[in-house]
Image 1 (cartoon, rainbow, N blue to C red):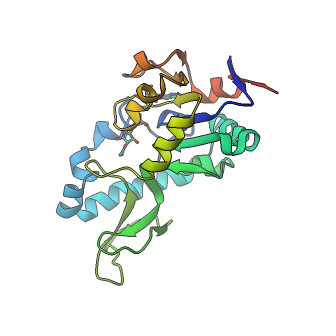
Image 2: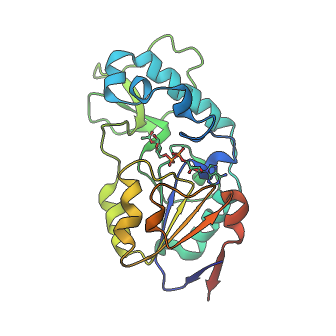
Image 3: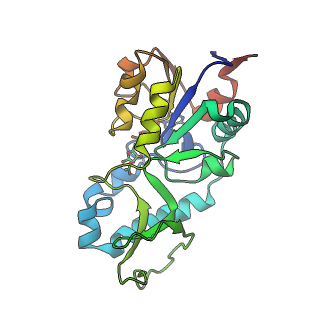
Length: 235
Ligand code: OAD
């Protein structure tokens, strides 16, 4: 059990494992995205310059998978925690799917971007909703400025989104819970080390992550099975 007091400020970091039971593959496990696709071919600025069609095919496929997925009990538990804790809960996800929102979460920081948003690769037009599944992407869409429309995703070599807000929430948190993330990708992999001096650090996932030494407790198992019964909230 994980006891949360009313005075706690809770920082939740989620990774691909939280959506695995919804049918969305993780990255590094068996059947993971990076087992069949090379990061340098589909998820880097260089890949975009070299073969935009291949990049869009990859993200169109991921849009199709995500659009067929449904939130699982882990997503619903976090949405319910938000209703209880309001501004004292900060949910930061590395996931680009929208399952937290579809479970009812209203304030989720997507540090690696959002699958159902696109933006221009040239001008400063803000990212926009884009649910196009690009069944047969004959043409890469273009912006009015002449630039190419790209997925609103943080690729390798790019800077994650909303880092100022994330670091401020990390400074303030008293409980840090990471769920379903292997601890392999920076900067999220260092968040636990950053808060371990002032917050309880807890991990929930199938196996110990690479950064396990920075967690005081590790609960091993499926997020959708363990998370709904994990919390005791002191009133
Ligand atoms: P990984 O694929 O690296 O790790 C997923 C973790 O979830 C693993 O530790 C699994 O053991 C665990 N897991 C699998 N099923 C689970 C379940 N049902 N319940 C709980 N845990 C489960 O994915 P991330 O750590 O999220 O970045 O990857 C981080 C980033 O690397 C991604 O956001 C992506 C990727 O490259 C970008 O694309 C920029």
